[in-house]
Each structure stands twice: as structure tokens, then as C-alpha cells.
Image (cartoon, rainbow, N blue to C red; front, side, top):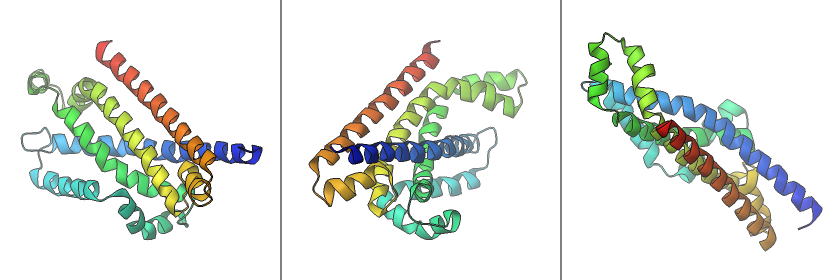
Length: 217
């Protein structure tokens, strides 16, 4: 590849990292909060609210059931309202975040439900307040699984960022479409694929190692 294309590849890589990184911060807090609410508001939970739980669960399932490419188009008015544009890195952050948050929320919910009911009951018997049960029992016990789930979510967000390139979101997906596909530049396409593979492998390795550390420390 030419020097110009190498520079374009580097810039696309940075755009993808920024796109996924900014979305990941929002997804971590929003998804974890949703997961906690789905667990604690369920019937028999420490903040039992079955009706609110059912409504939120239905909304989460609805967003999870919508393919990302359809959600990407459906959210164009909201994206324009929030960012003032429908193209570029900032515009891609909106649909990526909205798509990944319910996905991560369900993964976090599964990890939180794996915490034994006996552990929670023991904490209640010792007089722990509900917020203490959340921050000192549920989250610490479930964190290895949550980290593993968040790693999977990050990989899915990288895939979504590549698809967002189809509508001019920038990043590696946009570069692959504009040069690798539309201009039949096989070298650019292979380079983008190689960078994505390396990026995913690095994220998966770091996530697995950290989850292992939390589980066996």
C-alpha cells in the first residue's frame, strides 16, 4: 500500500478505537445499571417491582431483537438530534451505544443471578442495607462474569462499528467499503481485516486475563 493509504488506515484505526471506546464507557455504566435493576427489581428481589421489571425487560428484548443495521437507520433522526449530523464518528456512537447497552445488560443480569441466594440472604441477616448488598455482595461476586461479558460486548461493538461504515460513520469499516469494496483494492480490504482481527484478539486476551485474575485472586 502507498504511504497515503497507510496514513488513512492509521486514521481509520484511531477513529474506530475512539468510536468503540466512547461507546464502551456509556455501555458499561448504563448496561450494568440496567442489569442490576433487572435482577433487584424482579419478584423476590431486594427492590422488588415486578411490573417495572416486566416493562424494562420487554424494552431490552425489543432492542436486542432488532438487527443493528436496521437500528442504525431507524435511529438516524435521534442521531441527528443528539449530534447534529448523521455521518462521522460521533454519529456512530449513538446507535452503537443503544444497540450494545441492552446486550450487555442481559449478560450482566445473568452474571448477577449466578450469585447464590444464600449469600444475599446471609448479608440481609447480618443487617446489611440494600445498597451495601449491591456494592459489597452482588457486584464483587459477579464481577468476573461481568468482565467476561463486557469483553464479548466490546467485540460485538467493534463489529457494529465496521457495519456503521456503510453509512459513512468513519473508521475501519468505512475505509474497507470505500477502498476495499468500491474501488476493488484487495490490499486495503486485507489490511482492514488483519487490523480488526488483531484488535479483537488483544481485547479478548486482556478481558480474559482480567476476569481470570478477579476469579482467582
